[in-house]
Length: 260
Ligand SMILES: Nc1nc2c(ncn2[C@@H]2O[C@H](COP(=O)(O)OP(=O)(O)OP(=O)(O)O)[C@@H](O)[C@H]2O)c(=O)[nH]1
Ligand SMILES: [Mg+2]
Image 1 (cartoon, rainbow, N blue to C red):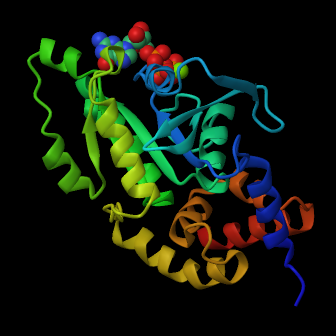
Image 2 (image 1 turned 180 degrees about the vertical axis):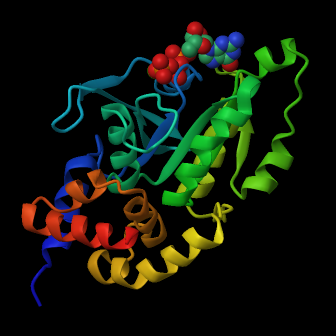
Image 3 (image 1 turned 180 degrees about the horizontal axis):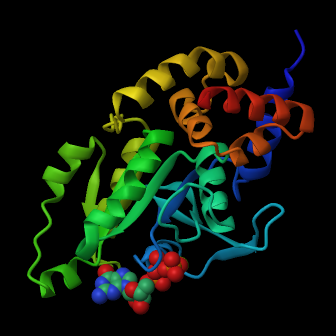
């Protein structure tokens, strides 16, 4: 049986996003809200060994760098700062497409310890796409200054993924962060993140859609997450998956059927 159009689209998207500096290297994505210290973490881990370019077809700068941990090479990808992955902006689309198609071995979400509530929104969106997540609670010094205490163990229990506290500007906690990344990349830890549940109407629509989504796109990209994008009326992900108008139209119409 030949490749379906969808699987060709997916493979092309994966090839475009999954570029390693060193073939043996593990790929680590750094996501997070703007100004949470992603680049500070990136610079600390990689030194000045950065490679910059543009994301495929976009004017958004792509920065990659390498580091060694316990003798193994890791390629770190600094994603644009975003509040969500809804693809409302080119930055959000780049971050989302990379987490989806780049198939990073681990995604680190850097969050600001002083405003966790807002930052955790992105964490919940990332764990809907991938389970291989580490949360890096940065700016712990700022939190302390504001007399805020973050219980990272409790947060890890609640989220179902490893959580590491850091003060990236001073290099505090970064060894632990690299250890947590290695533990997931080498499958010593298999995170089981909580999955956000929606109201009964949405959950039942997801149930209805799942078989069709699995039929069309397989299970490589979380079918539940794709079903949610359809319900939302977001076609950008399907544009990346299907480069042909006819298929996109099919998906668009399929999505439309849900609202009647
Ligand atoms: N006090 C304190 N400041 C930090 C820490 N980590 C980063 N910063 C500072 O926070 C500011 C933002 O850091 P960046 O690393 O540029 O943040 P970013 O997430 O890459 O920002 P965008 O790329 O704009 O999304 C800089 O002034 C850093 O020096 C930290 O742990 N504590
Ligand atoms: Mg940055």
